[in-house]
Length: 547
View 1 (cartoon, rainbow, N blue to C red):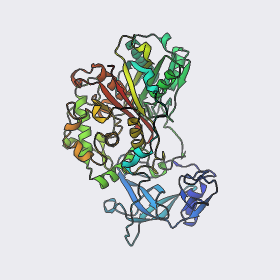
View 2 (cartoon, rainbow, N blue to C red):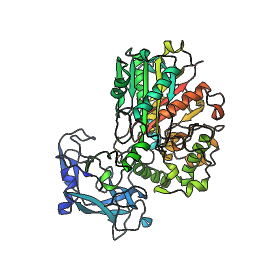
View 3 (cartoon, helix red, strand yellow):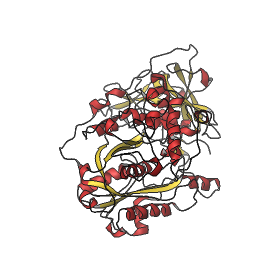
View 4 (tube, helix red, strand yellow):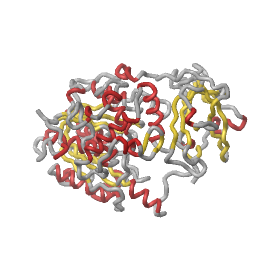
């Protein structure tokens, strides 16, 4: 299978066919002269709809790059360079591309590159190569400095909080494994039945269903609300599902809102992954890869097929600006593995050293194998109930203190925050406007770690250390250990426990706040923060015990 090529449309054809005469073209606002990318029907800066196209010089500044070692296609075999370049006419425009005709080891951030085109079928892909004169230019600047996100966050609109109306009353999980080879819906049902039983409820008590994302492609789920309702016949009064929400934990936040508005009393939230089985079925020819030969993505035509590629670019800039190193990320991976060793449900439990981490197979620089979470099969479910009902239920309720959901920066993966995971800094700042608690009140942090750099971004964003201070904070791993400043991902995180897309983090937070974590229990845990997602809209939830 060749790489996915761009799907041409009336809005983007000028860009993907510009190579026909060797000229790079970018959409332009005819009123304020800003360049706009990806193309839009309106200017995001002056809101004018008077849009046109400008011929640009084809010169750009190399703002980030990663050398991909793991993924690839027959017509784009690894290793190859995925990069972001800032167009010199308007550095706010950053193009995802490949750097060609050079040794990757000779690339440096800030060097000037020039466009060259690669024609494949009816598409001219704009690639870039270093200029002969080896010029350098200024790196693009953040639209909002990482330390300034708090200034753009909205204050609460009311003195009452919707978070006060609900609590988590039940949690459940299916078995977790690398290739269970069972239907994903069966895993969902196992987790849901366990959560309902944990809450002391029956199926007839459930009047709401909420999930993320509800897709059943690429091993990403069982089919969502409709699949579960079809199997169980719950007849909910309220449902929710989809990807445009506050990350994987958005299903829980939506459930809280449903209960606060009287739409439901007991909402069953669930999340299922069966990626490991799906990948095996594709190898056996029993499942088809998702998508087709054409894509609407602005990254995939250049072989940027994974979130790893996008995060690697942000990680490289964090390294360059703040002196972060691979060892910095390694302390996160080692912490997760140490915690997983105490968790019988974790997939990877064998001891790991820093040498093991550093010598692991490279994926896409600076990420190696142990910077990436573990594809697996499994499901997690959570019951969110009205708080008045929760106090009469068998398990100690876990109360919601605050959520952080505000989008501050752009949601385009390559046009957004440069040094941290996108959709983290704004949501974290928003969380602290909705509570009087502060980071030093938090006893346990269960932070999204699809990749180690996700976790680093959340640690800085939530204020457990300052922006750019993760290198010193994480050094040695003591600050994030179970007896450290902020115990982190106490069940092993997604790096060692398994990729449960955020819901496993909520499950662990509840387990810790109930005092049920056994050997890995953090003594006296009463406040926990959970984050989910990033890159796409994400969210953070602050939870606490009663009293």
